[in-house]
Structure formats: C-alpha cells, structure tokens
Image (cartoon, rainbow, N blue to C red; front, side, top):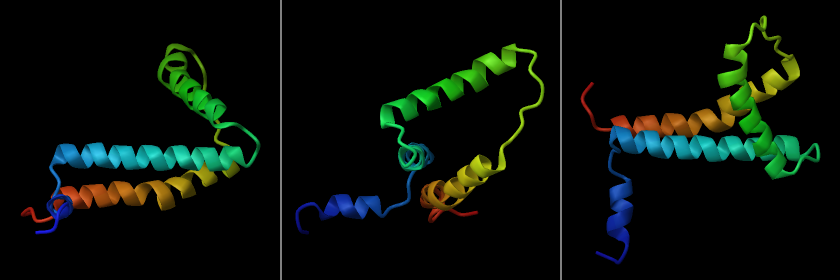
Length: 108
C-alpha cells in the first residue's frame, strides 16, 4: 500500500455520529462565514466587523430579546431571501453530506 493511502481509505468509511456532527458543523460554519464575508464584503464591510456583527446578533437573539418585552420581529424579504438561498444552496449540502456519511452502511 502506498504511503498515505490508509488515511484516504479511512476517510471513505462511514462516520460515527460524533464525527458527522463535528465535520458537518465545521463545514457549515466555514461556508456560512465565507457567505457572510462575500455578501457583506461586496458592500465594503471588513471581515472582523462582519464577525462582530454576527456575535452581536447572537447575543441580541439569545439574551436581550428573550429578556425584553419586544413585540414580533419583522422580516425584511431581500435579506431573508438572500440568507435562505445561501443556506439552501451553499450550507445545506455539506450538512446533508455529513449526515449521509454518518449513516452510510447502517441498517435502517
């Protein structure tokens, strides 16, 4: 067996649930970050500022809004549609591949 082929063959084996969650999360996170950099970078926003905005969004949605008496949140269609398409076309497939890899060869 040539040097390094053992590692390649192991990558072709089905993943454990933990591996699928780890690799799927990493793939989705990287692609989501790249989508944000491209989307907002085209508008002139530098990457550190983009990730500061993402962090602020999480704090707002997970801490501030639940603790406030705010009403319903209004969705804006252009941004929502853009996010939906990016997630459906660029982020969803790696998550699906990771899940399929985890269940490959298992009895259903």
